[in-house]
Image (cartoon, rainbow over all chains, first blue to last red; front, side, top):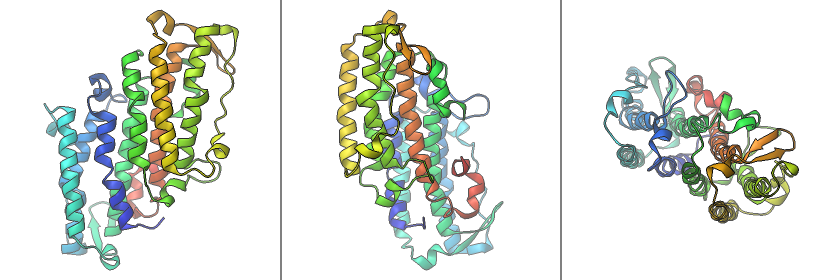
Length: 174
Length: 174
């Protein structure tokens, strides 16, 4: 499927409410459990998404529009949430994400992107040349992929509780 | 984690609204696209979840409570939605699922399950002996796993649109 800016907006604006529904007031054990050493809990993932709004998506779109390939993106710290989320409740994090995402979508509108601008190129510090259109598609897939990660991490907490049904649930061994 | 009936209810009651948020009024192309031959679209998955409410979870709980291991569960047809959903809009399916899930949760309450009843055993036609507790844990994981499948199927529609970022998005090749 080719990128459609209206679809991008349509999907991105659903994510804060989806996360709210999945995680608001969820018991601590479900929020804080992960998949084992060096993996993330649902709580960690919301912090990671917040950091994306602050430093990744719109900031990189602006770099592409303003500097093109002449200035590489600032590398994205995938794990800064371990420090930044400290002491915050999940409901606080969810509210912060919702506020930042609403701002990002407002800023996206204000960029007045045209098909020509969407093909504009930027420089990724590791991947090399990328387009603005690819950045926006990645934003969508990144959201969806972390929603998927959250439900996978949650599933695994009942990995033993399902007993013999484990054989029918590939999510538990992924 | 051991099964906690309050947690089971807490998670199961969120699923209809989560699906609504992800899929209500989503453009047709996103709803109807799947991962290739013999795979399911988000639209198909909602139909499959409806069929689970009608024939799997509460009906099997009742068989365990009433007949124990003396009567095997009726096998579950995982693909009956291809016929049953025909001609229905996604919003109709979402409403049906929400109604059925609310009924299921009411019926679950009415079963007045105790720790002893949760250990009661039933007979799965393929897996053999299972407990009511395992059935309920499977219900939770089944919900979460299909939410994960929906966002994975959606992600893949932008598998090419993300360009070089594909290398950072394992969801696209899963």
